[in-house]
Length: 66
Image (cartoon, helix red, strand yellow):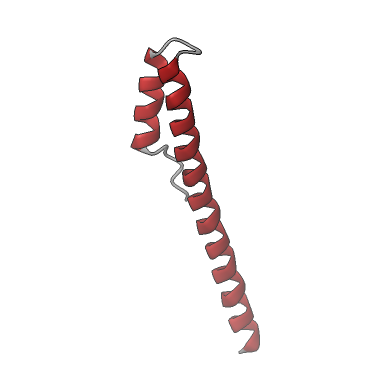
């Protein structure tokens, strides 16, 4: 079973972002920071998924070669 929890750093940024007025300087700044964190988080999840897929394919090919 996969663990689909949102990391604490993203939640903290979202809470901070909720305090600012839309289109303010800090709102724009935190929006960029949040986008960067979300991008790295999704890339990590994608890489992990690709690694699991590769491991599964290798396991299946090893079982077939036996």
